[in-house]
Length: 302
Length: 226
Ligand SMILES: Nc1ncnc2c1ncn2[C@@H]1O[C@H](COP(=O)(O)OP(=O)(O)O)[C@@H](O)[C@H]1O
Ligand SMILES: [Mg+2]
Image 1: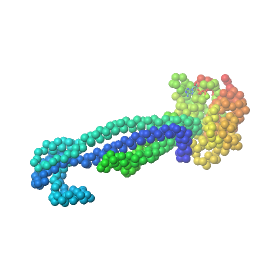
Image 2: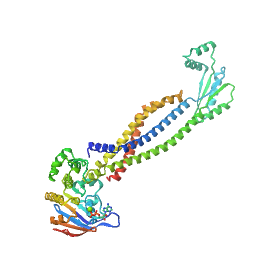
Image 3: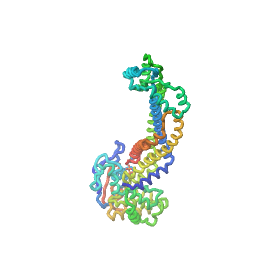
Image 4: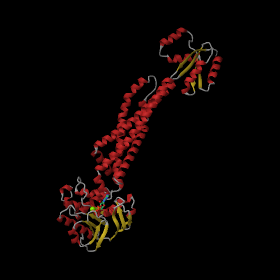
C-alpha cells in the first residue's frame, strides 16, 4: 500500500495544478446540492403547511342554548354513525365558557363584559372530525343538508381549496425538482469524470513512469479517488455554509406567510443536520468515486 | 529466463506485427536484437513487460507465464524487469536523485530503504556527484544513465533496453553500452534493442535479427546483418 502522505500530496498537486477545473467541478456539485436542498425545503414547507391547516380544520354545529342534553347526544350519535366521520366532539355550554374564560384571561374588558351579562351566552356545540381529510367537503355537504330543529348555526371553515392549491404547487415543484436533480446528478457525474480525466492527462508522464517501474495500481489511482473525495467534502461544507444563512434569511418570511402556523424550517435543518447532510455527502461521494474510477480505469489503464 | 513459444501479435487483427516467434534467453546473457524500424522489436519488449498481450503462443519470464498475467500482477512483473527507452522518460521537475527515488516511492517502499538504494545505484552509473541536478542540466548520456539507475532500484534480473543510444552521440552511446556490459557482468540478463551497427559489431555477443515480425537470424557471436 502506498503511503497516505504520497496519495494526499499527489492529489493536492492535481487540485492545485488544475485549479479552474477544480472550481468548475465544485460549482457544479454545489448547484446540484443547492437544488436538492431547495427542493427538500419546499417539500418541508408544504408538508408543514398542510399539516398545520389540517390541524385547524373546523367543522362545527352550534346548538340552541336550551337544548336538552339527551337531544344533543342523539344528534351526536346520528352524525357519528356516518362512515365519513371519525369523531364528534361535544362541547357543553359549561365547558365552552371555561375555555372562553381561559382564552381571554388576559383580556379584562372581555371578561368584564361577560360579567356584565350575568349569564352564559355561549351555545353548546358539536365539532365534527372527518375520517379522511380529503373528504371533509363531503362531510360538510352532509351536515349542510342535516335537518334538525336544535341546530342554531353551522360553521364550516372549508380549507380544502387552499389545501388543493398547496398540493398542486408541491406536486409541480416536485416534478420540476426531480428533473432538475436528475440533470444535475448526470452533469456532476460527467464533470467529475472529465476533471479526473484531465488530471490524469496532466499527470500522464508520471503515470507512464509509475506503470513502467511497477507502481501498485492503488498508488496510481488512489490520488484521483482522493481528489474526488476532496471535491465531495468541500462542496458539502460550502453548501452547509451557504444554506444555513439562506434558511435564516428565509425563516422570517415564512413566519409572516404562515402566520399563526408553526412552520420552522431552520430548526428542522438544525435538528436533522447529520441525517440531511450525511445522506447528501454519501450520495456525492458515491457519484464522485464512481466517476473517478471510470476515468482512472479508462485513462490510467489500471 | 525468457522464453517465447510460437508468439504472434497483431494490433489490428489483420496485419501480424510478430509472427510465430520462438526465442529462449538464458539467465545472465547479453543479447542484442536488431532490425529495421517497424520490424516489431519494440512490440516484443512491450510483450515482455506485460504492456501488450500475445494473440497466440506463450511468453515466459522465469517460470511465470505472462500471457496469463492478471492486471494486478503486472506491477510485480515490472519490478523484476528494468526497462529503458530511447527517450529516457525522466520527470523534468524532479532532480536526478528524486527521479530515481520516485520509482521506489511509488512502489510503496519505506524511505529508509530509498535513502540507502538511491545513492548506491547513482554510484553504479557514475552520477552520485550530480544527483541534485535536474534532467535539463545534464547531457543526454547522463540522462540515460539516470534512467538506467532507476531501472536498477528493484535489483531486476532482467534489463530490457530499447534503443538506448538513439538520441546519443557515439561517445555517450559507448559509455551507455559499457555500463550495460558492467551491469551484465553482475549477473543481470540484458536484452538490448538497437539500430547501431558499430555497437553490435563491437559487442561480439549473441545477435538476433528481426524482419517483418519474424526472427531471420540468431547467432551466438553475431554481426549486424542488414
Ligand atoms: N500501438 C500500436 N498500434 C498499432 N500499430 C502499432 C503499434 N505499435 C506498433 N505498431 C506497428 O507495429 C509494427 C512494429 O512496430 P514496432 O514494434 O514499434 O517496431 P520496431 O520497434 O522494430 O521499430 C509497425 O508496423 C508499427 O506501425
Ligand atoms: Mg522500436
